Image 1 (spheres, rainbow, N blue to C red):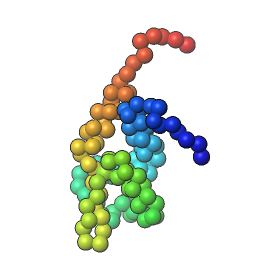
Image 2: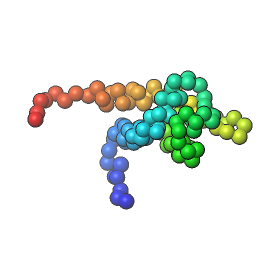
Image 3: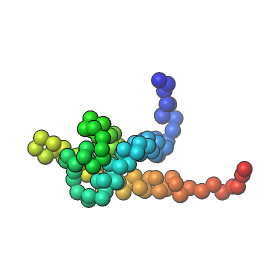
Image 4: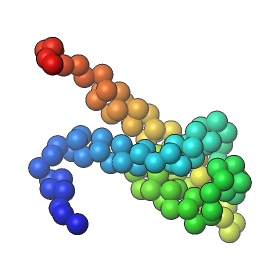
Length: 108
């Protein structure tokens, strides 16, 4: 696998790419929609409601947690997940700024 040379890009460009990468899987979008809809922490309902195997759900949760979109708290023998609202607001701001950029010239 080749190097991405991420160091030649700005911090903002790397952040946007990391967010876009983690949001690039429909299972992760489904997980986020589920967590947003509930507005509370979820421990074991994801497997039943998303319809994927536990190891698959766990891997997707790990990726979402790695970029800070969700957070987890230990509750007995399980981990409960919810949206990290502070980071969610930052991500919305970062993506909003990027998506609201407009080209000033018309071409093609």
